[in-house]
Length: 204
Image (cartoon, rainbow, N blue to C red; front, side):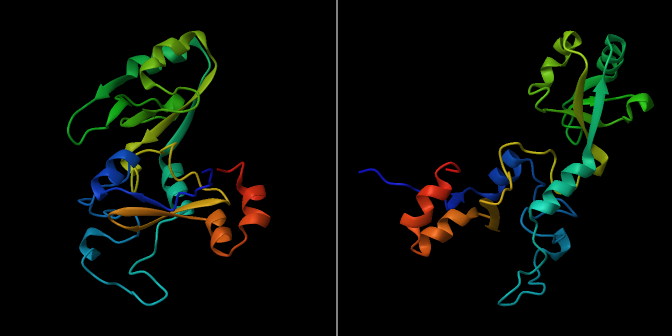
C-alpha cells in the first residue's frame, strides 16, 4: 500500500548527539547542553521554568549559525607559493585536548590565521587530507575554524540543522530531537488532500 510519511522524531542518546553533530559535551563548563543556554553550574536548576517557557533560553537556528560564524575564517589561496606556505604551517593534532584535526602551528598574519586555526571540510575541500592536491586547482577559498573561540559547537555540521522554512529541528531533551515540520502541521489539521501533496512533495 503506497503512503506518504513525515519524519517527526529522531532518537539518540546525548553522547551520540554531541559526538556525531560536533556539539559541546555535557562536561563543558559554559556550554554543556545542546538544547539550551545553561552552564554546567546551572544544569541542576529548573531556572525560570513555566507552562510557557523552558528553564533557560533555547538554542536555535540563529544561535547555532552565530556560533559557527564566530569561529569560521575564509582564506583565499591564489598562488602555489601561498599553498606551499600554508602546507608547511599545518600539521595534524591528535593530542587529547588539542586542536582536533589539521591545524596551523605558526602565525600567518598574511592569511589572517593564528596558531590553532583548524582546516575544515567545505564545498571546496570535502576531505582535508586532499589539501596537497589543490595546488593544481588554484585559486581556491578554504574554511578554517578558530578553535580558541569554540563555544557550543566544534564545527559546522553540513548534515544537520539545515534550517529552512519547511523543517525546523528542535531538541526536546537529552534522548531525542524532534522535527516539527510545517508539513506535519498540515497533516494534523486535516489538510492532506488540498495542500500536503502539492506543497510538500518536493521537500520530502
